[in-house]
Length: 64
Image 1 (tube, one colour):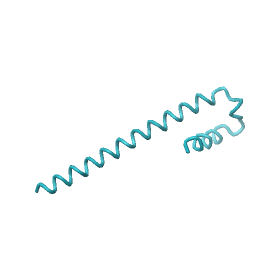
Image 2 (tube, one colour; image 1 turned 45 degrees about the vertical axis):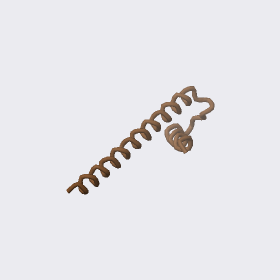
Image 3 (cartoon, rainbow, N blue to C red; image 1 turned 30 degrees about the vertical axis):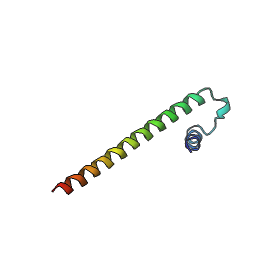
Image 4 (tube, helix red, strand yellow; image 1 turned 90 degrees about the horizontal axis):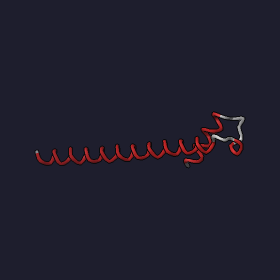
């Protein structure tokens, strides 16, 4: 999935370039993957915070 997204992005940005001949290809790919992983980690952390907040609200409602 990530590879497909990267290739779509790469082909849109550099339509005339052949990835096998591009010296920057692997660096761009590594940076794209790092950004994807960071986004995923942040997304998971935000979901966990949201779930904790909902649980806290439920616990607070039950105490009243």
